[in-house]
Length: 220
Image (cartoon, rainbow, N blue to C red; front, side, top):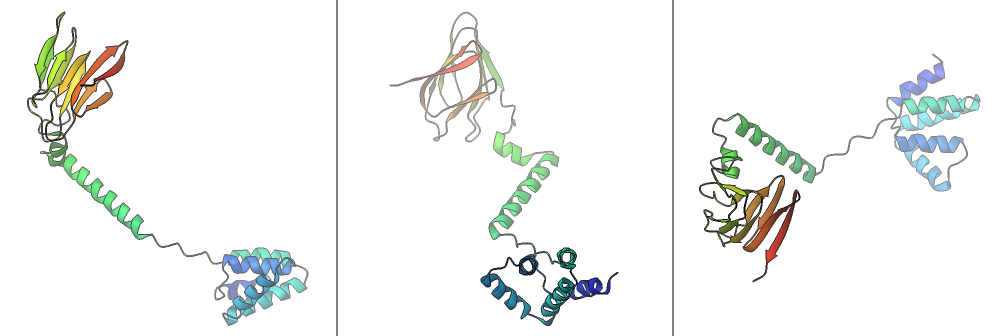
């Protein structure tokens, strides 16, 4: 290897050749540096003896007419900027996500699934325990929170025997009119196919029309 190249590599191990410093050196030798950039380059050289030696080596290389190749070599000894420290908010977010992941994994492998029971109730996500169907006539169905349901002909409703905490959920196939009672300030959630409808309180009719769900609220 050329002696000058070897010296540049050796000095590069000690000089603080940051990406910014390398850019300033390159702009200087291409006669593109402004006065402010030249002053910045002078301040960089005064930081250490290794920085000054590196600049002198670049001058020597440029005298031989092969400065462009040594600029390329200079890029190889550029020190990468240290990674930015992670912000406190990001650290906290990662820790919360890790805790959630651990809790979910523990709940998954525990036979009793305490978290699932807390969220979904004792019966889990499959909450339907009782079903009522109609033929050609409507039926009146009373839910565990005393809400009244007028189930339309050829419809079906499924619900648990009792509502667990805030989990007031029913499953509807067809159409029905709901008269929801106030119960712990929690709404009634009605699932029809893949659609969930939330009924806070009052009267609401859900109609199955050509595969679509039509919602009609009754204003007292």
